Amino acid sequence: MLRLMSRPTARRRSYDQYCATARALDVVGDRWTLLIVRELLAGPRRYTDLHADLPGVSTDMLATRLKDMERDGLAVRRRLPAPSSAYVYELTPRGRDLLPVLQALGEWGAPELAELRPTDAVRAHWLALPLLRQLSVYGEPGVVEVRVDEGYFHVRVAVDSGGPVYGEGPCADADTRLVLGGEVSEALARAETDLPAAVRTGSARVEGEGPLAKALLGV
Image: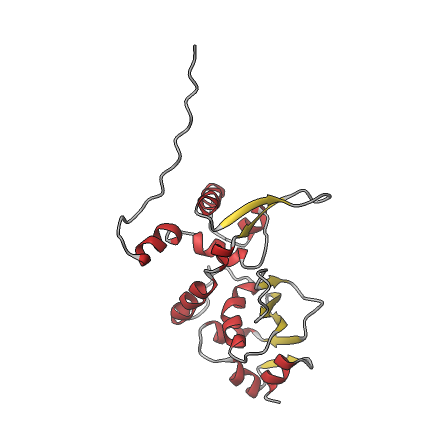
């Protein structure tokens, strides 16, 4: 009689240090994990969409990291209702709690950007998180549609819905619109300027009548 052997569960690597920082790195310290979180902060994403917006990641590595994130309670995989019926990945509340961590890392890493290299991939929505941090300073809620040379994205400022904090493409319910040229968007990413300065000098154009638009315009 054959005995079926269950496959052993992969053991998560650990620093084995009784330290909150070490424990956090046990969960999110592997290559690609935090960048996957960055993408999923835009809401549920299909595997193919994630792969397209994470240039350089192999299919095997992406699949492994997503399984790790499911195991560690950062993300879940679910099936969309018909007629789509596609499988998507989305963050759990624990995963969404990484937003300020990513924003702090982005702020710290901004000086490392320097000039755009010929080999650098660029996606419009990668500016969403640093821009969200600057927009949040105004203390006004709103949905901001942003146009840059690479395309459109939108950010949800102080909208505590437990849902996406930003998204790709235009947004029909945006109450504020922001147009950024290539030079100013790169300067904002590198933290060489800020939104008030960009608006004041005319390198960032603001449209809208909502409280956030008025705050940006200094009205």
